[in-house]
Image (cartoon, rainbow, N blue to C red; front, side, top):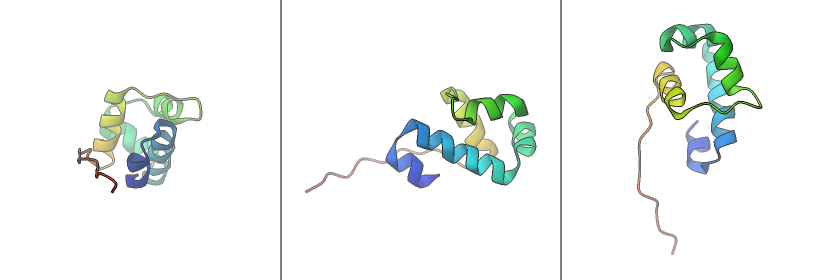
Length: 75
């Protein structure tokens, strides 16, 4: 998840959320977040495009948090 966020590619972040969600169990994540299991599969599938609010709910439900760090300047 960290690598996907650092890379900054939206599709890669969606794939990482899908992988983590499946490893933890989509049913458990759905119950934790209040989101429907089927809607999670749809949002995190290959053609999915989850809203930012959904990403935040998912991350919280997975026990993860989002934080901002300054971009290091390359010399």
